[in-house]
Image 1: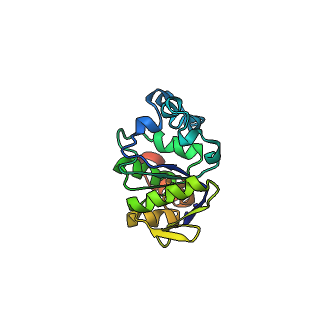
Image 2: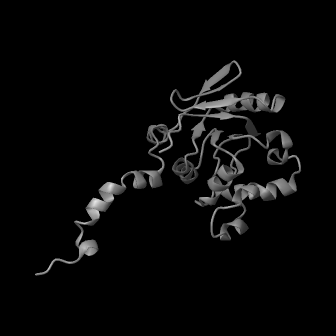
Image 3: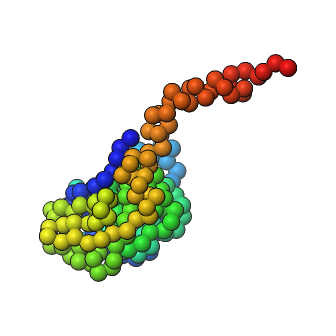
Length: 198
């Protein structure tokens, strides 16, 4: 199981409020059979309407930390939204707050979603714009974001933090890790091993 204690790398600033899941991934892309290729369509309509959208800018194309505002991921419960961000390259999101279902979907994909104060987000966004190569570190063990000589506290529900740092967020890996116990249990279940005769 993959333990996620820190995420570090370049960041992309998108400090806007109430970005809903339909803006993150437009509804027409929900018809896909799998999530393959969905990353290239992240924020597609916003990017078409605004050529200066951060996701269009070459200096942010290798970013893996997204910085945003209040109520990020609101709207529908579609898993496609965090899937598209993850497949675009985002490995962590720092925002003022998150919609609950979006946050849960991020956690189940192994994408930490941490909350920060608005003033800290504004300062960080300006620093990223001034130096797009700036390394931003999201440290889940001490609940801090660090960049340059600056650091600030972030919050994340303890249950989500624990599941990420311990690797328990990855339910498929947990299932595979417990395969011997599952195989053993299977032999004791009447509907799998044959019905008992009366």
